[in-house]
Image (cartoon, rainbow, N blue to C red; front, side, top):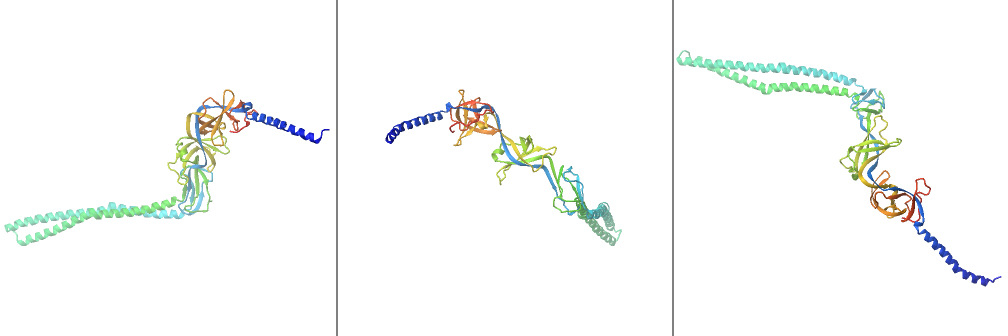
Length: 431
């Protein structure tokens, strides 16, 4: 049996050989790991296509009615009767409710009597009193003119007779005195008529007309107050709210009935200025509603010309038809708007583009030798799982869509179907 010293000597002799064998094994393993071409990876792939791509802008919104009217009574009075219930369809001008109005009816009757009286006074002033005074002034002027002409003839005749010595001087003096009086009467009548023309007649007519208009205004005001007791719909729509019951008092300025036009709904979205520049009135849009399988088509009806100073966004309205009333105001939806369109673009599936740790975008292009090579690319717009590639690839090339993550450049690949077990698996190394 060998001694302990001999065993220690043999162990020291074998130790270098063991370390050498382990080193060879490690070197062999490392060499295999560093050769990516020695491993074939099953992946999924797609062709680089030259096609049209449109950028879609997604935004959340809440559906609003096309038109809404919260009807506020202008008078405070108890509700006499409601003619509609919540949910009822109504038309513009339809009577919805009436308020108690006996006092208002009495006021209308009172003012109607005053208006009738003012009309009669105006008729009398314009057709009787004022024309009669004007005609009397004209007659007085004509009479004064006739007297003046007569006295002038008498003075002229007596002056001739006095010169011939046929009459005494006293008779001529009497005639001259009468002529002076006739001239004064004529001047007075003429001034009176002119006054009637310029002041008196106009003032009388204005006074009568003013009284008539005042009475008419009071009558119309009373009628308006009475009409306020009838609550009518200003728009076509559906009764969305009716908080009171018949007999309760409706307060002036407080909503009594709310009517909404839901034949079409508006989704209001807020976009950045850059996004809003790509949207125009009339552009097509779609609205996704929870619980509805297919998106609902709509159109852009308004792009605000101004930027909201608070949010620095632009408000855009998307109008969607709702003829059957299946959509309800207040529903949260997601709006998709068509933005920029590139008619001829190089497009790859979104999953084919891998982002490196440094933030660069790469794709794995499969060559004719079934070897994948890493290509850096610049990307453009995205839409529905597709990405525009601005540089780095050409149309017709094949790129890895599943399995490119962590794949080394120069990896041997096999393109498999989507259901293959190894398709999309990770390869050694890192991008």
